[in-house]
Length: 206
Image 1 (cartoon, rainbow, N blue to C red):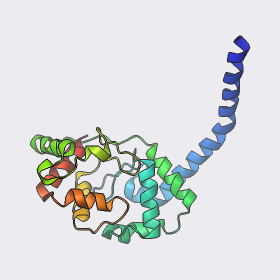
Image 2 (tube, one colour; image 1 turned 120 degrees about the horizontal axis):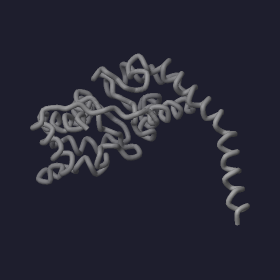
Image 3 (spheres, rainbow, N blue to C red; image 1 turned 180 degrees about the vertical axis):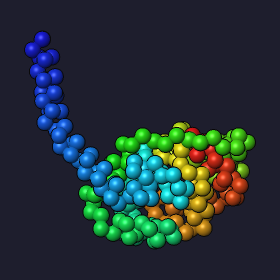
């Protein structure tokens, strides 16, 4: 019994030891790529300080990969995508896209910033309950109880409020296209600008 319990542990330790150097090398390559390609707008670890550029730290890898591919293939056609991301991603390989997505997803998520208490409370209600009278689905359904995201549905917690409002406006006006665009167009159609600001304030505070 003792031998049977010791052997797997030894094999596991040996396996980790063998793969650790290559994993560290991959992480270093991804960090170097992120600094060369993305840091000037999104910050060294994806902690953007400018509301014009989203925070990437802690974002879902699946979402990041999907968006980078959409930029690369020019299927996401909102104005900022055309102005910045089409060109920035044009030379990225599929492997580079995967590495960047994994790198940012492993960074520490940003802390939220306190906003107007009344606006945040209104936004929380909209996020958790939606607008039943307008048949608007609650954001929590796709983005999670803590706005942590799920798969291709992005993390929204701690994001710049201004950036979130801009995206909601673009979804409503059909300026932003992509995999989630039809869902988001349906959600935002019934939202007015004040409601968008409230939801964004709540998410930025998380």
